[in-house]
Image (tube, rainbow, N blue to C red; front, side):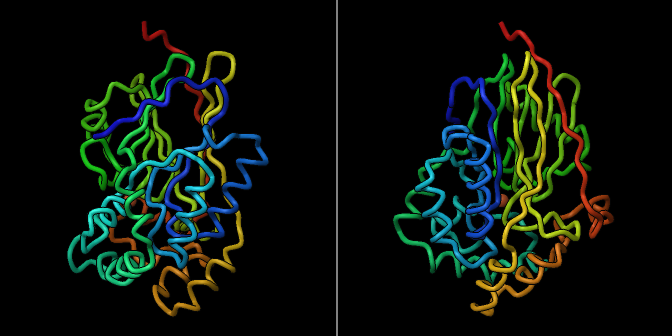
Length: 284
Ligand SMILES: [Fe+2]
């Protein structure tokens, strides 16, 4: 994994992922960071800038011009390498895989060569320190870029991933559902995604704020409300990926193939997330 060290931070950071070519959600996210006074150097996108939504090239242009830090997701990796599929790790024949046969070629056609080259140069991991704690941002897992780690993924599986990093806190994306969990003295967080709802019956995306304060790092998840109707209308004009277009307003995913039973059973139930406070440690 190519790991880029961003150094040490003392101010708040905003982390998000999965803009998925949803230009309206991306605009809203950048407006939130501006409103909060968080500079681009403190905003991190953990990958999958493009996927299911209508405006991949415009979304990439906006993200690039904003100057925020961006990590390679499986979508960037596949598009940069000219692969024929999204590399999400969907099983052949599953409905996710069938849906990808529609949106992935669209992204590949729409994106400029320049955007694909930029994607190919992105790091696969980012690390930084806050208050003596080492954080590492990944797309899926440590062992694979397209590893799905959910809240219900077993502690053993998460720990097997964490042995591949010396970080105290891992922040992933990819799976599309935000969560935070303490595992002994370490933590696994998922920022959530902004470009699709969290399958909870609402239109909102999610992002994560890390707020250092008096020797602790407060981790707080927030809903991103945005003009989902405009994002849907851009998709409707294409008359493609209608299942995902529907999701933007219904808040329900068109397929739950990738979800474990616990997350499937939460479909349509409004998601709530407790914040987590991580105490300072002396790594010396
Ligand atoms: Fe992904």
